[in-house]
Image (tube, rainbow, N blue to C red; front, top):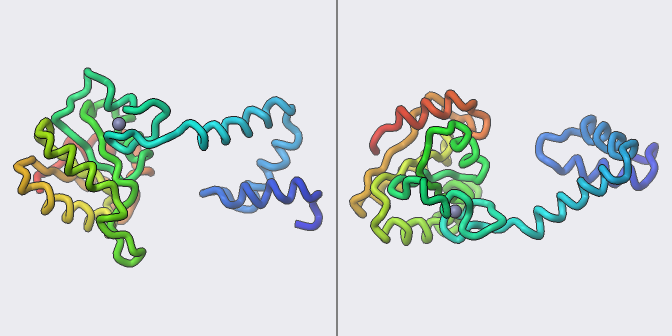
Length: 199
Ligand SMILES: [Zn+2]
C-alpha cells in the first residue's frame, strides 16, 4: 500500500480485517470516508466505540444487549415456556425477523467442534441448564446451524436435556445442510421453525 498516503493505507488495512470486506471494498470504503464530511466519519468512529463500551451479554440468555436483562427476557408478553437455542446473537435475530416466534432465546456463543478445540465448557451451557432446572421451560427448540458442528451440538444438547423432562425439538432442515442460518431468508426460517420435530 505504499502508493497510498499512510493514514489511508492504515484505514484500508483495518477495514480488510472485517468479515466480508475484501481489498477492493476496503479501498472503496476508505476513499469514501476520506471524501465524506468530518461529522460522518465521527459518527462512524463513535458508533464503533459505543458498541465496545455499551454492549454486554444478557445475564439470562447471553444475547447482546445494552440493558440487562435484554429486551427479549424482560418482555412479559413473550412465552417463557419455549426457549430457542442458537449459536450466535445474529442467529436469534434471523429467527426474530420471522415475527412468529414469541418465546425466549439462549445463545451458546458457538457450537461443539473437537477440531477447533471447542468443547461443552467453551459454550454457554451451564446457564442454560440452570435456566431449565428452574422449571418454567417446557420446550427447547434447537436452532443450531445445519452443519457438522451444529448437528453435533444438537445431539449433545438433546441427550443432556431430555432427562430433565423437557421436550426437545430441532428446527426442520428446509435450510440447506452445511449452510448457516445467518443466510436463511425469513420464509425459510419460518418454515424451519414450524416444521420442527421432536428429538
Ligand atoms: Zn436475555
